[in-house]
Structures are given as C-alpha cells and as structure tokens.
Length: 426
Ligand SMILES: [Mg+2]
Image (tube, protein in one colour):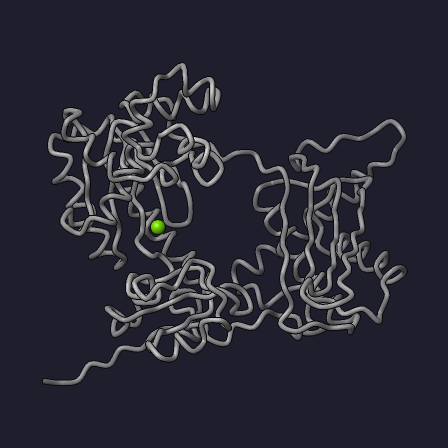
C-alpha cells in the first residue's frame, strides 16, 4: 500500500506560512528575473492566470485584482521541503522523495487498519508542525495513489485525503472516471492525444483497455500503467538516488552585458555552485561545457559553446574556472551582449576511484592536494556561511545576478532575516 503526500500550491503555501494575511487572496510566485508565474494560489487559478503566465502580459490584471506577486525564494522553499521530509521519515523510513513537494510512502509494513483516519491524522500533523496544506492519496499502487491525491486536492468534499485502499471497483471507478487521461502519471501531453484518438478519455477508460492493446501502443510502459490502474503494483518505491550523470548551473542575467568582468564573475559563481554539488556527491568531472548566449528575442542572437576535457578528473572550483576563463578570454567577442550563461560538468567519476594512467597525464598529487584544499573551503562555508569564503573571481561583480525584486525574506535560513514576533501584554 502506498501514500502520496503532495503539498498544495507549495511555493505559495510557503509564502503564506509567514504572511497569513495572504490566505484567501490571489498570490503568484514568479520565475527567475520575475519572468513568469511558476506557482499560483487557488484564487489566482480561479482568475484564469495560467501556469507560466508572463508577468508583463498580466500586469494590468494583477493590479486590478490585487494579485500579490513574489520572486521565487528557493532558500525558503527548500528549507520547508526539508522540514516536511524530516517529519515524514519519523512516520516511516520507507520513503521516496519524488519532487520538492511530493513524497511517496510505502505503508505495507505499517499495520494500518483505517487508512482514511491515518491520512487525516498525518495531514493534521503536517499542518500543525510544518504549516503547509497537503493532499494525501492512498492506494495499492503508486499510479493510483498519485491519482487519489489529485482527487483529494480537487474535490473539496474529500477534505484533502482520499483512500482507495481495500475498496471494491464500483467505489474506485467513479473516481477514475473523473480524471482526464492527460492527468494520469506517465501519460502527459505526448501520449494523451494518441489515447484520445482511440476513445480513451479518462483514467477509467485506460483501466479497461485490454493489456495487449496497451502493450501494442505504448510498450511495457503502457502495460504497467494499465496494471497499476487495476491495483497491481508494478512500480516499487525508488529509494536509491540515481547516480548523477551531470551537473548544470545556469542563469539568465539581471541585465544583458558586454562587460567581461561581469561575465567572469557569473562563470566563477556558477562553476562554484556546480563543483560544490559534485563534492557533496563525492564526484569529479572529466569534461565541461560553457555556453553563453545573447537574448533570443533580440536581433543578432548568438550562442557560443566551449568544451573542455580535464586530463585529471576534478571538482576544483579554481582549476575549472581558471581554465574556462583563460579559453574564453581568447575567443570571446567583447562587442556581443551576453544574456545567459550555463556551466555544465559531465563525464563524472567517483572521487575515490581516480586511476593513474600509463602515459602519466593524470596528476594524482594535484588531485589529492586539490581535494583537501576544497574540503577545507567546504567546511568553512558550512560553518560560517557560503558568503564568508569563495574565489575572488566570484566577487568581481554582482551585476549579473538575476533580479528578484519581490523576494520575501529568507525567514528560516538567514539570521538577518528571521521573522520577528511581538507579544503585547493583555
Ligand atoms: Mg504539489
């Protein structure tokens, strides 16, 4: 038996946690550079603001309906997500973190007699201890659990919890009939039209599709979906983190620039973040790619890519940045406006399995020195904060930083931005 715990309008709920006066009011959270809506409250959805709505197009509407806008505050959302994960791991260790706001729990070993009551209690506990509303779906397969959580979110009468556990088909099927085919986990916009073309419009239709037909149309994946909808579990909890194949960090600049030191600062900062992630995962990169591009929507749009191969695999911020900047310095046309930079590190190997090669290209000594140097940097950053230590190139300029003019305080991760509470006597 599985449960899916899904936070409702997660980014908006995080903002409301510290500004409860926003409950009941339309709220949107905007993407990088305050470009488009990436999260919407129910009230904003009801106004017809679609996902990905460009802020500039909706400016008048936002004003007219007093829609509260926020720049994305990923520090805050990440921290609230971690808190929820910690709470869920006290419920069971059988947990799969599916996304920043969704987790699957495997309830098989838990000896629950009344799933509905269990779901209600968990939902209330999350509300009390974390402060964000969630929808919970419970069912014998992950596909059904996901579908049940969607129903629990949409159908107000369900009070946020839908359990399909131990129910006969005649009680489950009306729920499936209410779910359009595109909303089923694994169907999406690609398979949706194909299925509609043969008269499969709802989850119930797909459940009743002969398995041979599903296999014929969509291979093993199709067969699995039909089995899962029929209550036969094919998708186990994925607990192991998949081994990372690459790390990418990219940013659209706050404003376009031709200033090489601004570009250099951006590259150094993006590389620092990417290499930090590599070190956290105990990995080294053998190759890298830098891409710089102009603004796609302006005339003369160009994109440049530089590729690098490291003879010694590395996660050293300084070494990688220096190599990228030196190469860019030779080739970059300084008259061109730069709008966006991406740093990609790939061909990754575990850091403790670097091997010497016959020709002596791999410098094991350099590798060891670099690893201990960076370990020290990471320890200092972990203890005193990321802003306390870094490479000088990162500090050359802040002008590339994306604009986030509407960001709320980082209430839970930054000492200077802690919320204040005032207690008045009486
Ligand atoms: Mg969600």
